[in-house]
Length: 354
Image (cartoon, rainbow, N blue to C red; front, side, top):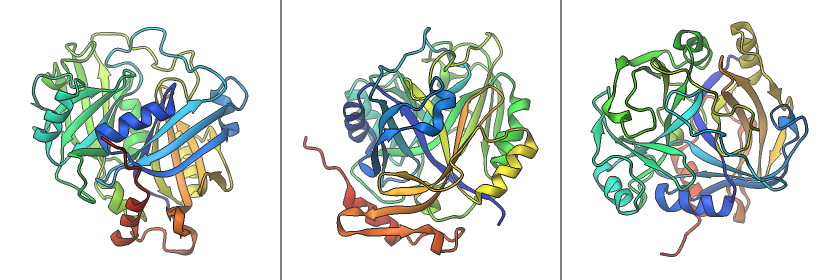
């Protein structure tokens, strides 16, 4: 079969204390549905972890609000390293993750009271969509964006990954991967200048070229109702010489470690990546196990070394405690899973007090 990119499955976030970070993400973004929680050795990633597999614990946590999940990731045998120098907007790698908000006014109020907003008020982006910036206690920046698309109404006004802003050294060199192979071929905007919505960030008052991409033909697939529509924004610094965010650090160290896409047709995608000059650097080849989930995963790199993960899921636990699993190998891979079935994930929610 030909390959299909269903959407952004998750963004990986390296942290020093998984339980503390996940509790924060549950409270602020409603990331309270654990798709899996797993401990073990990340042996396939030795290429990016100093030449050997490293022990870790990870949780893939989603929001029933809809959108992509967070893979919160912690080393269990070493202290994760922070960047040697403060990250500046335009540095190479994943800088900001977009979070969808059905009620931006309410989410801004809640986040402002929590003391995590970077803007004094919501502002308009080049698409004339209201947004604001927020930061977690670990220095990761989130872009909360007005979006009416909701999978399931929750008590949270915002939650779920909508997109990502990726620093690149040359937009034209990055386009064959992001617009070509990954299929984000629709230009939502292509703007150059100084931008009000970026101003609060370190280096945010410099000049940039920004190009936001979406899928002309949104691919269908099992999890497409939950993941929703997504975007990628490539950002190129024009006034400064950017650094690699993960220069001299391991995958899994502090910060945004990868951007992951839910896909179907891994063999076809592998061929397309090779043909475009972005060969797989990691390939599990066969089934991998992550807690109660399994499938096949691979990684490739953009021209600046930013890690892109590609996952083809085979089995997912919908309601583990009653033994309800979804076998994706036995169904049409391009047919969306019924919403009522995906909504069963809410029964696994972690309910915090207070």
